[in-house]
Image (cartoon, rainbow, N blue to C red; front, side, top):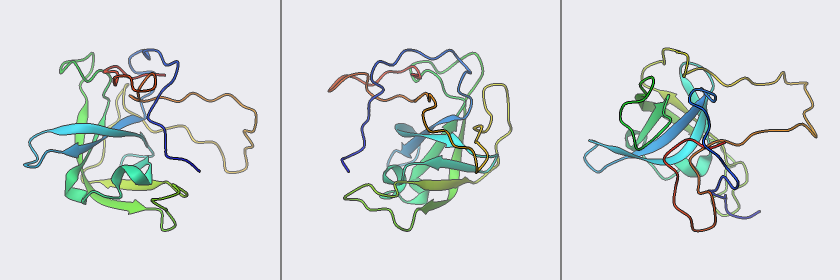
Length: 157
C-alpha cells in the first residue's frame, strides 16, 4: 500500500453548502493564534469528526483544530460563517501503521459540540448491511488538482 494521495484530480469548485459534513483538520501555529489546513475529515455527529490517522497521529491534541462550514480559504467572510473548534480527545485506530498506512483512521472529539446549520451537518452513513459495491462516490476536499500543483482555496468535488 502506498502513501496517501493529496490530490483531487479532475476536481472542480463545489457549490457552497453541498458537502456540509466536510471539515478542515488544522494544525495550530506555535503560539496557537492561527491554524493551517492539514487534511479533510467528516462530521459524524455534533461531537465527533472522522479523519485519517496520519493527519493527527503526530500532533498533540492541543495542536489540532477542526473547522466546519469552511468553503473558501481565501475569504474570511463567506455566505455563512465557519466555526473552528478545539479538540478534547483524539483516537487513532490501534492498528494504524505509519509505514503502510493500513488502518489509517482516527476520530477526534470536539471540546464543544457543534450547532448544526444549513452548511454544517453530519455525514449520511449507510446502514451497516448496505452493500455499495459498484456504486458511484464523490471525493471532496482541498487537495492538489494535479501532481505538484498548488492547493485550491475553494472546496473541490
